[in-house]
Structures are given as C-alpha cells and as structure tokens.
Image 1 (cartoon, rainbow, N blue to C red):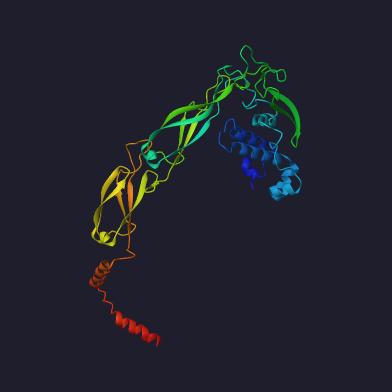
Image 2: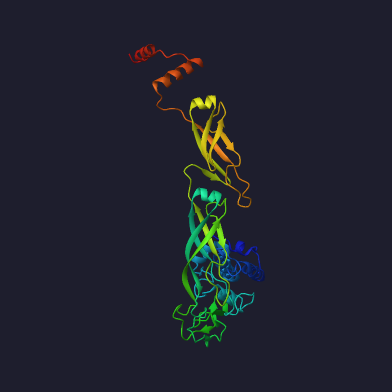
Length: 374
C-alpha cells in the first residue's frame, strides 16, 4: 500500500502548513502539462489522495493507526479529490489551489497556437537491417489542417464567433463542495469545449474540427546499430497543430526479428560452432558465416566445449560511431557422436588402449555376470 507521508515527502509529525507546502511543491513537477511521463497523471492523483487524507484530522488519525485499509473499513472515501467529477487535470489543479492560473497552468488563451499530438508507428525490420542500417518507406494516417477552411472549422464565407457562455475564455467557474470545504472550480466550457469560440456553420470537409485525417507516405532512414525497441523521431510528421501551432512528431518504434544464427548482446554477436572430437584434439581451420560473409577461423588443438574464438570488429556498429564495431564471439561445442560407425568404434578402441585402457574380454565378462546370478 502507498505510504502517504512518503508520497508527500514529509514526516509523520508534519504540520498542515508543511503538508500543504510539500503538496504545492510536488504538484508543480507532477502536473501532466509539465511532466510528460506516462504515469504522471496517476502520480498526480495519488498526491491529491495523500494530501486530502493528511489534511483531514479524522482521516489522518485513522490512517496513522490502521493505514489505507482502515480508512476504507471506517467508511471514508479513499478515491481522492481528483477521482470523478473533476474532468480535465488543468481544472483540477486550478480549483485545488483556489485560483485559476496560479502556477502558470490554465488560464491561457484558448486561441493561442497549440502543438499537435505525437504519433507512434511500429515497424518490423530484419536482423541485418538493424545491424547495417537501411531505408524504409512507411505509410501512416495523421491529421492535417483542413484546406477548405484553413483550420478554422467554419464553412467558407463564415467565421467563428466568441462563445457567449464563457465570453471567449474557454472556461467557466463553479463552486464545488469537497471534504476540504467549498472550492472554486474552473472547468472547460461545455458549449465551446474550451476553444472560446462557436462555429455557426461548420465546414463540410472537416465537420467543424479544422483538421482532416489523411494518409501520408515518407521514407525514413534507419541508422546502423539500432536494436529491438529503438525509437526514431521524425520531427513534424505527427498530427497538425491548432491555431497555427506546430505539428507533433512521429515516433517509429523498431521491432527487430530474431536471427536464426546469431544472438546479440549490445554491440557483440554470438554464434555456435559444432566440431567433432578429432577437430578438438588436433585443431582445425574452418569457414563460418559472419555478418560480413564467409570467414576462416582457426581452432586451436585441445579446445574444450564452451571455449570461444573471437573475430574482432565483426559485430554491430555503435550508433554514435558506426566505424567502431563490436566483436563476433564463436562458442565452441564439441559434439560426441551418438551412432559411430564400426570403423570409428575400432579407432576409438585403439585410442582407448593407447591411453592405458584394456581391451574388453567379452566372454569372460559375460561369464562373471552369469556367475553372480547363479
């Protein structure tokens, strides 16, 4: 369970003023308008829940004694002040601090230029394409400014008018009662949806939105050395902005297919080379496939299973310095034959005798075995 004191970074003896100060400080950094981390909104809500609990004497006493479960068992609402009814986080932030635009959030001109949304595109590439780089043509859907209305959303010959409900601010004020008392809450205007303007006759092409969805085709360059889930940013290829704001970016997420022959670890690659016992004892020179084609490697006499042979500079290029590459590490695997031929068996028997072993006497062995069971 979350520790409310740790969330606010205060001691268990903190005063209400200290708790309030800590909340204001952390809310600045966790507000989603500032913090673009995917979990920022959730942390912002957890912060509000901790603040609400510790600022209420009854809730705090119950929490200190029994924890969050104790609050639930006692019938207290543990959803926090930001759960339901608050809507947009800008409204939450402004209403919570009893004023709109107190820390620079909200209160901005609804007709000011706004950046468009970023987009994600998932692209699958081959192992070698990731190693050496490539170019790929991709097609994707994104929002572009409507050419019929130039992004206004209004039909040609007409223009938007100031919203009579919010008088162009895009926001309306209302008073809400919460466990913290009555607070003034700023919410998005329900009539103009925060734009500050109303469109009498919507553009037929974009239905009043000011943007239309279109397919676009572009070529992207994939640098050498990218890995699985690497991200390529293509500036300005996201959704179009609003009120003349810049377009967002397109983020291409790479999914690299696994190789049948190689395993990658950073900029090094690994492969396995199987040899027979004779090659392990005597050594050998063998040709193997590498990322750069066929190369000859020398196996030293007496090599053991698990030993490695390294080809320097035959691995993956560094993205920041493509001229520098990792190594190709070859793992030796000595394979013992499971079904040797009769000729091979004779040679192994000869080798066994040379190493001090004795030639098996099959008849005498069988007689000994029979004698045990008689």
